[in-house]
Amino acid sequence: MNGTVTKNQLIFDFASGVLGPSKSLFASTYLFLNTKATELNNTFENMLGDTLFDNENTPVSKLTYKDCITKDAPISTKNQKEVTHSPISRLVGPFDKIVWKQVYKGFSEFVPNLSHKDDDELKLIKMDPGASVPLHSHGGKEFILVLDGSFQDENGTYSKGDIQINDQKIKHTPMASKEHGCICLTITEKDVIFFGKFGSFLNLFTFVKSFFK
Image (cartoon, rainbow, N blue to C red; front, side, top):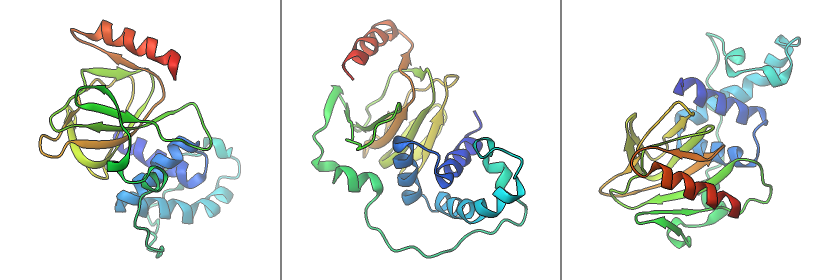
């Protein structure tokens, strides 16, 4: 999966207003934490109106971010009123006040209460220092945004404001920072698929758990 293209498409879809509630919250929190992503979003917003006229024969639903980029595309520098809390923090409050549900030792989760639901599974994940998730992939895309601390896997190290987007071809073993742990906002489109020694047991656990969502 081309990470840059996928991230840019997420930002473009947010600027276009086509994302559902879960991905909109995810994307808006990403923009709050990442200056470069915010600049790109502002550029998309500034260009979208004029670009629609230039692509009048292309259905809006089939436009991609590449259709709206030109060599001399301006980077927006418009000022915005300072906001001190991220969109996810304004929804759930301080992370240290959340009542986390422990899934296993070192790994806890919390499901935000969105006023409008969609098919995406949005969660907050808290990993204690040094905690890890067994080798796994996903049936669909997985979106991970680091809110605090950091984690690393086979693809690199991800710190506050970084996102990782994986598809079913990606297998990884995330491990939280040994110093600070990690808190992430995640979206999974389909269930996790585990591998390795305990893969069968964990997949059965995931299957049974799906009946209680």
